[in-house]
Length: 145
Image (cartoon, rainbow, N blue to C red):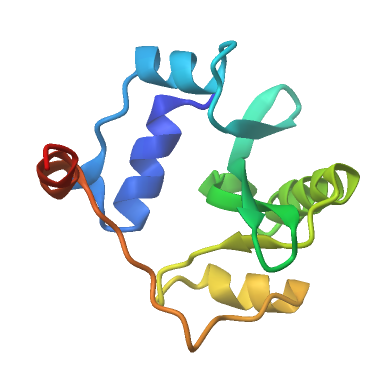
């Protein structure tokens, strides 16, 4: 299971701690039940959780094929630079290939040093796309129209 503490560590790293709402029950019901909305890969080293990658499938109307969106990649600091992140990414990419996906995408904060790692893998940042998000108050407001 994705450790709730890992989610908090990731949020602290991303300077987004004030946005964490997830609790164990929510994680269990949305990630580890029959109604799963995303999937999690968990890396272990000698029986200890070393990190996780959370992803879900999306779809490209232009390609007419599915893709994978990586929501989170987290590696415990004591296991960084030991190939854990690369192993998680490679396994996710293997799953994408097996499922017939044409692309794997994710977002990274512009100051995140992991961007160098992503670019070493061959990933290219978008310069011409802007990420948009609606949350809580606006979602409710728009849903009530």
